[in-house]
Length: 277
Picture 1 (cartoon, helix red, strand yellow):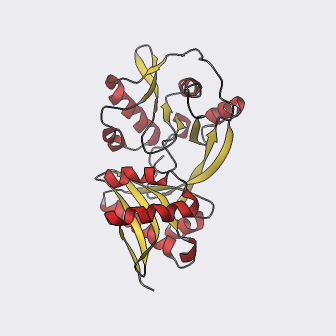
Picture 2 (cartoon, one colour):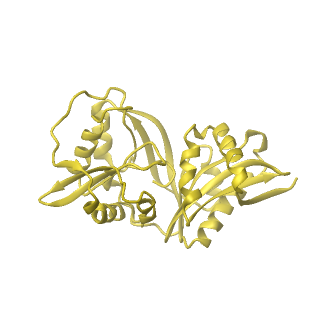
Picture 3 (cartoon, helix red, strand yellow):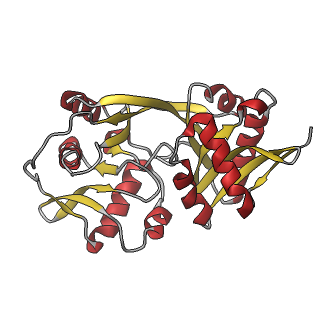
């Protein structure tokens, strides 16, 4: 058995996506990979067994922090240490990119693998779906469309909530950052931003009122029912979703290897995806 863990070649991306879809990571996994493929501080790694792609994972670096996402191994190749080897390869790549702390969201099946590598648990997150979104509009509560002049403040809010510099995500969207903000007395107190690489909006706010106001407006936007992922540590947001009739559709464990960033779950009312938070 000859196993290679290395960056994926361009002609291996489709095979990698096929493997990851087959592991249950969903039809959108190809879209999730686009950011690490295109980012100068991202990468897609593959596990190649006897010349055949049998696993893959992606990494996204944000300076002092970095994320592992979409890690999966084909069922026929499991129980051979490939998941552990992929994880270690991702950690090494993120360290090369400058990350001191490596983060990920683990499934129940993945937790033992990550624990063996040295990751520790930082809390539970759930994804929620609005199964009965309301019709019509509600009061705006100071919510308005995000404008280019808001970008510095929105990025600052994100850093205050996550403890990370995710400016590369915002930069990759260029000037077209779709979203909403809550404005109070001329100052932005919360934001909701969508990216091309995930289903859910990233919602951060300075307090419960601002965060819940954004979620209330988002669930009335025409289109597919709102899906939002957030940490269980934000009890106020969880209570609001339950009161509105949202249903939990999956969960994951936030895990960390390295120093703890200044993550403030009570300020996080929605994450881009279960890839980089």
